[in-house]
Image (cartoon, rainbow, N blue to C red; front, side):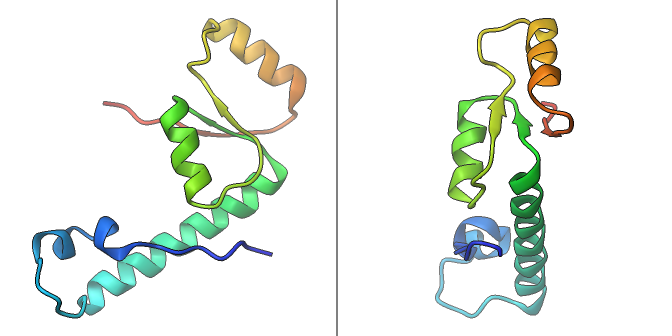
Length: 102
């Protein structure tokens, strides 16, 4: 069962951030928000069975706010990449990795 998610459309949809009037979101904005909610729901389901690896503490906090309740592991935990990978491989058979490039 997926935990109910509340999405603040004003924070997620760029056109609504630019438009400070109290108009209804466009159909395109609502469809984008619905797709995003589906992706988040799917990630919540995956996280019930597999840990998710993210870059840092803020990423962990963000995913918790989105409703992920399983293991979320921060890559930048003070360990070297080799040590981190060895520990992860020893603890889990499979995991999901969510890293971004800047």
